[in-house]
Image 1: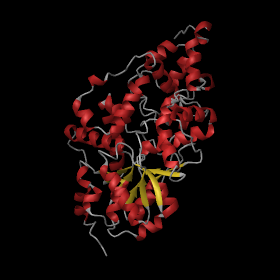
Image 2: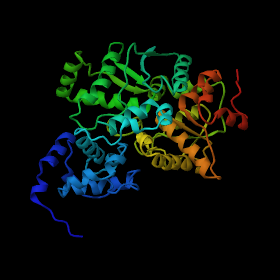
Image 3: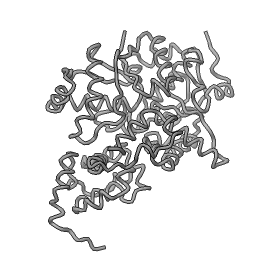
Image 4: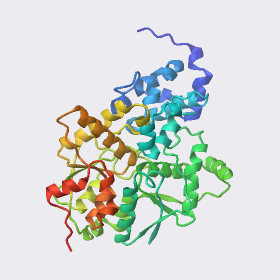
Length: 135
Length: 293
């Protein structure tokens, strides 16, 4: 597969912004794949954690932002626990969620949630879900 | 001995049995869980992006109020514990963010506050030996799986309640109560957490795998410290029994329900009837749980 790497994309303002708000440096990752192996959600993800980091390393932040993986990560921190380079993929996922949420782009609308869930679920599920999915 | 106690929103509502059985257990063991006079929700998720300082203010306010009573605060819910402990570490290490939070709340933050999980109090301040002495209803012969999930353990550098990949603290407590701990592969895996809101299918798979991993190793009971894990596991089990005839159902209980019950609390305090699968039926079947002395 051919991938075009552009200097402009590697130095994009948005990528710098993501690094600034997360405090993470994707370039530190050497792609061992431990994060993806440990991630309980990688089986469902279009790009598992190590591939998401690879996208960022190649300056393809737009593709990373569009990935469904961003909304599947539950911040369980298994990726970070297993990383030999101290890179937190979970924090980068949170940063990518925030790029959308801070522009007001909600992943879920509260009015779309079904009533039995709202009535039966523990409060912490609602509070946490709203924080992760709603701006 | 009084220990400031932060119940959190879920223990005040749907997980009332978790709260009541812990308070009563503390009394039996000679200390009091003194609920903070005022508290708010911790936010139920630690803000991972360091520039999201507003997310630190709610747990910081809880820590400020607790520190007025004692430099220690305890909690039961794994998520509250995770959020409070990570906030305490962040604010103690980062004076700049501490200052911003202080200016916002308009109160001084005391960086010496220590956040302890209730099980840490039992292990380090009371001792499991003393717990064992108080047992009146030994739950011998019941095979119990301790499901830790994520929040008690990770990130390990901050949380460190026990060894990250192979924790045993819950098993030690269960052993003191007379239960037989079962080792199972998925004891530190995620249940699906807040995906309950968006992806029931994923939660059913992850939580279902956790239960199957436990029952596959012989567990008759799954023990947790997190109301969201408890909910997700019960939801997954409800779904599984509809779809699979061979599914073996197990009660999903909080560790304090077993603790209190073993120490002789009345059944109303443990609230087993609030769980979808009542553990008392298992006790009856096994012929355990009758009060001795």
